[in-house]
Length: 80
Image (tube, rainbow, N blue to C red; front, side):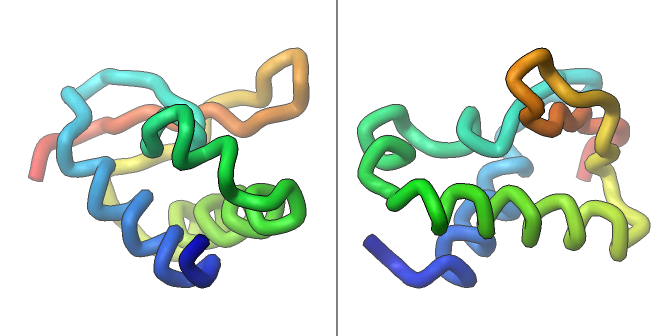
């Protein structure tokens, strides 16, 4: 599996394919088998890095809520 920074770049790039108003989890940005191959510690780190990225930039992705399984949900707010 690639390094976590590469996975973060992939996740950020994949957000361009979302529709405005669409809610998602970070794992939704990867194909299921790709996500399952990422070691758990790297998935946790990726989630933290993605949240930090979203909070740092003034972009089109906003953190909205946590799921019952404590996963952060996001929403695409404006088109690019």
